[in-house]
Image 1 (tube, helix red, strand yellow):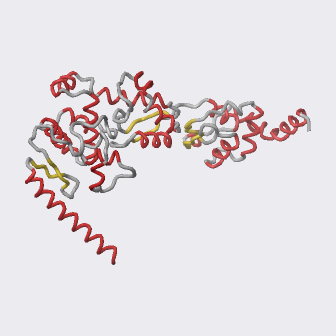
Image 2 (spheres, helix red, strand yellow):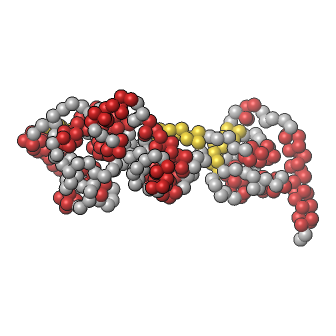
Length: 345
């Protein structure tokens, strides 16, 4: 079949719809219909058939083939855009095709959780914004790109501030990273913060490193400055931090109860083996943990242990700590026994 014959067939097929659409094109849909909208996602690389399937699934079109034929006839098959669209019901085929060729940026709420690592950030942003997670992770470890941001570090872990953000669908990986790093560094722009860090002889990198440990330990916001004070007190006397989150960072797999052999893993991040702060952050700490590490509580505590209720018991001496730990061990044994009895019922 020649190209002319194919064109004639398309025209014949579309003629009944053309008459209706010529009438409808110059008149807006009913107001009530326009008020009903659907939010749809057209991913990058979607075929015309896939776009038609999506529109049909949301009842924005009745006939997939008609939409496809109109798109081809208008030569718009390569002009339809990827993106997030809020599409009103009632558009005819021509209006809908033009609508999808000029996307209006749509804001999306994205929550990035305190304590997440770079991979978790990347995969969440990939799911919500259709970014390339692998590219995001690569950039966060690209020292040349990191230098462009004015940072002297080998990884951006710790520099991506977790919060709930409004992002535009279609934002690029570099754009997102620059934004998140900027949000973190903004905390340190205040003159009072600069004076405080100078007084404590702490750099931004060191502060974020300590904040990431606080993030790994704390559940209750009110305890964050106290936990930070424990680590500062230990640093002041040359005592090892012995922070469990640093061990979780160097062992494989998800967080779990630590074993004695885990504490012997040879790594500069092992704060049971090496004094001082580890080389860098172990997660992306939230603003509360960062501020707690800038403005720690003034205490003489050197120890803390979980109290079994989400908080901690803080101690000044090893003897106090041993008693608190014994109490926690008692609670833990009780919980284990209860779980065992429940499993037998």
